[in-house]
Image 1: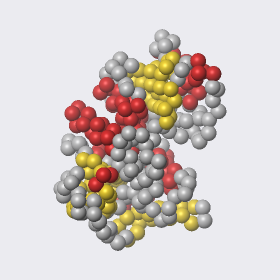
Image 2 (image 1 turned 180 degrees about the vertical axis):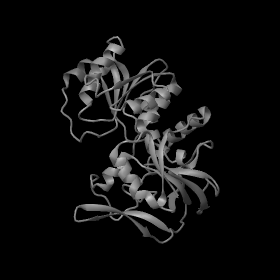
Image 3 (image 1 turned 120 degrees about the horizontal axis):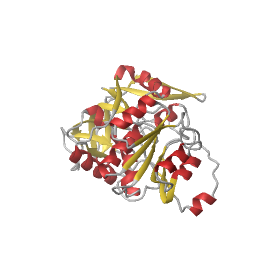
Length: 333
């Protein structure tokens, strides 16, 4: 089979198309013919060597969908012909995260390949109305947004969500806010992207380049109450403003690291406002399955910005690096 590998040599890494032996099916395992995959910002970090202790070589990407072609002894959760996606963390089935993480495209081989083998516990069936490319966007970005707002945040109708940007997690957060009957405020540096957010149902939009003090503007929009939830994508550069924009007792979901790894933040506002800081690192199989039920019920469709061919996988990485996309970047096999 053909697969892409990240190979590390002397502190540099590169993505290369290689020939690999067909994987052998073992007890409890599921053979999957991959149909489509999608990229996350995390995949750029892996390629750039920003994830420590990465095995090399490794097949990249955590998010993909395919058709079950064969099952090993003892498999009962799926059958040949089922369309499935893999869990981001193959060990996280429910409850709190496991002590030992085994993420696809991280601690173990990912999905940028013609065929993959996963344990039956590490796959879920995807909503039937979605295309392969749409379904491939779910395992990381969608589950992260659902976990933040629904599983951890317990989002309620009438609450207000501040969403940073229009990437994959952000647009899923906007769509899930609509499902919950919540209000969404979206900030971006692009008027074109903000127009997309409006079309998807954003109640308010702000261009942070035109309104640098966007936190003060949000306080004005909320009559100085502040928002109930923040989808924090920026990291160090945006977190202090998120603290200012959140209401007392509100929840800031720490998800992205777009502006760096380390933040300097004053503690008193967090204490006085009784802010909940929740780190969000995707979610469990149970969360994934609950989300899929809602997506199927409401016939929600993920936003796919562009689809590349398998042969053009390297170009898809460069397209993501430019940061001009809205929603998800996919690769079709």
